[in-house]
Image: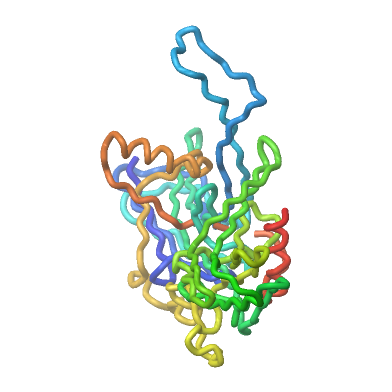
Length: 376
């Protein structure tokens, strides 16, 4: 039976900071005959999931009689899942939904402050969503989903200069706190003549697996590099915010390292948050840099506004729970379809995320997480 679900949020975009309130209304439109439901609920769900495959040489390889080519090693699937937030509110008890549009009332969820932000990565993702569930007797439940973009609130007020040195080389940073889109300035000071330098801005992501066994997969990506003794490296605007929790399935850190022919490699951690002093005016901390392009908390639409003026987020398709659990396998499926249909498909880069853990509010606390990931 065709059903249309509309999420009316209290702001024009589904972008929120951690610690903010997610509120709005839900409406359903039944196109044909009435529908009997046992209950209607809405859930705020935040999940971190990881998934990747690795060849295993320990398992026996099976070769069939009709095999003509070399056998391939058995692929093991590694993955983990962690629920950061799961809050449910009952919107209606047992009732009959008549044909037409029906308002189900208001909802409000308090988003915890200690949750990671939304992101989609190569081997994992963090997703937040609102899910409306229609429970039916002797039939499968109907579910509708609206994805949310959650921004982790990590604020840095001080520039926090940093220095690391060896007997023959010194690496200096006038500041070590940034937001995506800013430029990372550095300076090298050798004590002996040297001509070969390579300074790299790196992103290190650690993925954790719980099944079939506990394992970590570390992926290091060079975002920018330079061969000059003094330069600025650009931090991409799309770079995800650094992690601030130990023990999450996905942990993200940034660092700057230098290789030269006159010294051992040098490395300094970088702290990437949502708020940091601007690069051009480092002393003016009154105007800070932000990465959240959605509305701020002060720009929320008043609750007394006419609900017809709220932005409607339509959900025409019924949501499948199994497909949500296997989201990391979807990119492979889409790439395979692209070969046959030659269609251009775009994968969303948004992903989610509760568990009480200490905040990273200073670079000193963030340094503990950096050491944990780099030397795990």
